[in-house]
Image 1 (cartoon, rainbow, N blue to C red):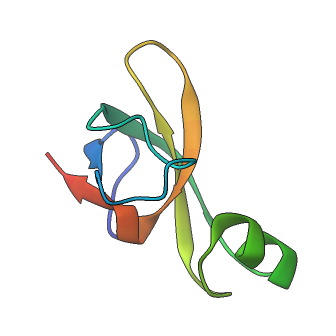
Image 2: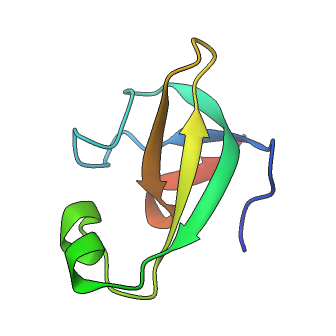
Length: 72
């Protein structure tokens, strides 16, 4: 696991538009491993990838693949 619960992260500006709050920061509030082809297609990452639930300061949250996150 690359990020810890509560850790501040930034969503990459190069992430597909449906994943990001452009340049917005947030904090990790959950994680999941992609186990099915359907989830893999929905999140545009291979089966076995890690996705994190990122909560923005406004309280809005979104699932973002690990490859589109960086530590602050």
